[in-house]
Structures are given as structure tokens and as C-alpha cells.
Image (cartoon, rainbow over all chains, first blue to last red; front, side, top):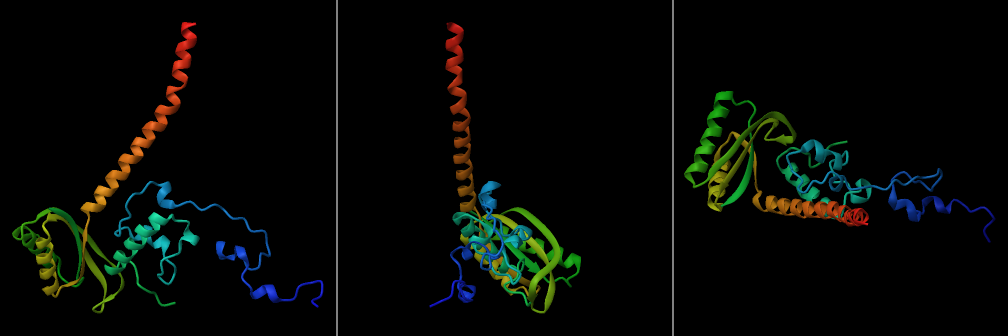
Length: 101
Length: 132
């Protein structure tokens, strides 16, 4: 029989809300979830150009990986275009394939 | 005729007049292969995101052209055999442009409808009150 207080078990079990944000370790502090809006929808960008390395750079991680939608809030159709643009930019050395950390 | 964007990187240690020569040469190849150059943009020297044949910098050139598929095949072949060209990429842009124009049109139509919607309903009411 477990005592009234729960043991350390929930520590290593991912909580259900864990997928929503990277900074919710067990929900210690109140976590405000801001509704993320697709940047490209907001600015009404129809096509994403691979030449704009600065813009694309906002959607890759430090290691050069494409950031998932759940982190950036990009909508499905724009994420698709974004992924294509990033891959093109990588091909012509505007963005890295991988960076050493 | 399709629209293409060809971007290529020239070795940064090439003298400026050589770069100039190479670019005009490439333009010549496009014209010879039945293409039409729309714009040539020398984007200048910039840092490469990764090393290409031991180079850390590169001189970027962008060609926007119109042509048949054979045009790009020929241009790509020329770029491939030129040692001073580090890397190149060809992208067809006409379909994307068409898609963008279509989306813009849809958006315009929607905006017009939204504007027309609220403007219509108060107008008859105002007219009615004036008549009465």
C-alpha cells in the first residue's frame, strides 16, 4: 500500500501536457500556454522562399534540425512549404545540414 | 516555357573580372539553348553554412530565366564542368507563382465579400428611415 504522499514515480513519467511545451517538467509552476499562431498565416505569406535564410533560420534548432510544428505553431500547409524551403536552402549552403555543438 | 531560378556559388578566390566573365558566359549559354534571362543578381560574397571543397566562403549568383527544360539541362551541364563553380541549384518557379496568385485572388475575393457584407445591411435600413 502506498502512503498518502505519492512516491517519486511521476517524476519520470511524462505528463499529458508535456507534449505541449518544452518547459513543463512535472508542472511545478503554473504554466501559461499562449496560443501559437502560424507566423506565415498571420503575415499572409503564400510561398516561402529558400533564399531568405534569416527567416528560415528562425525555424531550425541550434543543431540545424527543422523545428516541429508543436514548438513553432506553424500550420500544416506552411510547415510543409517551410520544410521544402529549408531543404533547398541547405542544398545551396545557406543553412547548415548539421552543426557541431 | 517555364520559369527557373538557378543559383550557383563561385569560388571566392576568383578575381572579380573572372567572376564577371563567368557569369556573362553562363548567360550566353542560356541564350544559346533557347532561354531568356530575366534577371541576373550577384548576391555577393557570403559565408557558406558548411565547407564545400575546402572553401568557407562563396560568391553567390542568382539567374532568373525562362526557357524549355533543355535550357536548364544545358546550363547545368556547363555549371557541372566548370571547376570554379562550387555548387548550384535549379528551381522551377512558375507553378509556385501560379499558386500564389490564385491564393491572393481568393483572399481578395474574401476581403471584398467581408467588406460588402456589413456595408449592405445598414444601407437599406438608412434609406428606409429617410423615406418614412
